[in-house]
Image (cartoon, rainbow over all chains, first blue to last red; front, side):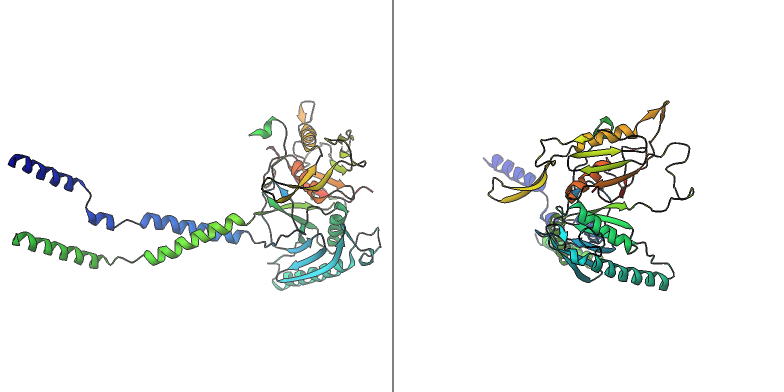
Length: 196
Length: 211
């Protein structure tokens, strides 16, 4: 009997010893987790600053999807929605002309119905061009005027209106166009080489 | 018994001393903030859409001088002047030497036009959603362009380094179709074509529509 009790006691002691000490549980090592968190934080912060463009989409402005991988760029922005054309630069946004059924009214075009130049857009873009050129001059060419323009257009906009906007921009010395799209479209390819 | 108790007390005191000497920072509040920020950023970045750009130019109205022509046309290879037109009935490919037969639509014409319009339907969750009915044959266009890119004459690639393409479209072609065609022209989704990868023609020159 006595022997059995002793054995049980010994067993209990052994088990107790095998268990990890309470002290070590209360003191978790959180340094690796913190490293990870800090790296994640920095990554996200950097990611945030990459996408410079700020865009509010609505029913009147849904931009098309594309398989492009080029990143957005900050420049004078022309937005073509289902209802209006708006020019944005920095913090200012100025409505230019109303759009109806994918067309601007003939009265705002220089050459009437069949014309290409949208007069108010032209004059505003010329103002922007003058301003940007002045900036280039004052900064001695450090902030170069490259004639870049970002076009944000609704996916249903007819080609004619797009080309009118681009033609007008071209007339106002903006010759490099960037069409803003949503990334994530599927690339359309054919042939064996493209399959990988 | 007394001995053991005093030893234990001594050990506890020593451990406490060691902790003080180490001067360990209390990181818990900092960690709270970091975890919160990470979760916030994760949540917002999942919602935001990534934006991209398609770069295009207009045709030059002055003939480029020999120096400005760039690296595309170093030797006596003929200029391609590839032009792709999006017409109401299909794609039209033309070059300086030939005009290919029109690539027709994948479906029957509707009111004389290739169907490309926005339609809406009610999905199985009872929500209304819009989608594109787009019957242009992009696959065939891609195949034809690849054929042009890999065209050989006397065992030599003729247009392997050609990257320019002039794009035109009919008046009422929706922007969606134009962008999709540009995607097809570009081929593999890359930032810039080097001329040797699977890229087709990435330097899009936009031209006025066919009237």
